[in-house]
Length: 338
Image 1 (cartoon, rainbow, N blue to C red):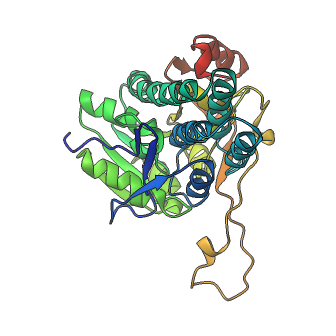
Image 2 (cartoon, rainbow, N blue to C red; image 1 turned 135 degrees about the vertical axis):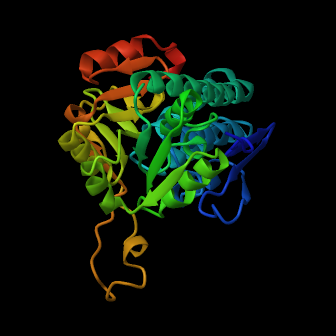
């Protein structure tokens, strides 16, 4: 496996830049963010995406705001950033953590908190990969959905793709990558990352995945997550639930990989997760008759009963019920959770 490291976020003292993920795979364009409002706009536009990276960027954006003062304007800017997207819990978690550090100890503490978030997510990715590979020792044909690599999660391989990279270090693997709505993030981003890592892969439309699983062409499904409820229900990019149902019918593992920061113990179950609805023109485009109503949920919720294992940096929950979720959270440093 070769290729240059994938770096979605660049932080230098007082300066924050992100790799514009809407321009990949054709252009590698860097965008500088000045603070909370430009970061919020980048998150809404999917310039920045992936729950852990959203948290990293949000933390740095709050640190930039803190350098200008920590009064009412600072609090209002944090509120605007916190509300940029509703489903991924890492956004609010990171804003709250860095805001609290700034208001308690000043702007230098805010920078330290933001950098700590970045370091923790990098370390989490490496640990998730090894734990996931241990949980899937015989899996060589992996189906994944959306993009849960370094672009979305930091570290060498992110979350789901970190598991793939760890498996590839132990033997040959091949990946079936679903194209994924919105904005074909699997086709554009996951395939771009897999090519850089020189991992054999093929692209399929989302609707083809269940049939390929049923034909015995997949050993395991490995996906990332945007929020995990206290009972183990998982919110991930829309289409994930269908893959979980297909995996259960075929009797293969359905594994969710994510850092502890993605677990939200304040949300009892999946019914409490707000699902973002995106603009209809992302779906209708030029194909549908003008004025056609569109439903465009960006995420769906997979019940914990369909999840074989939840892989985190602290270990693996099998199955991911309330007791196992609480056990994993108890193993984490306090700063890494809520």
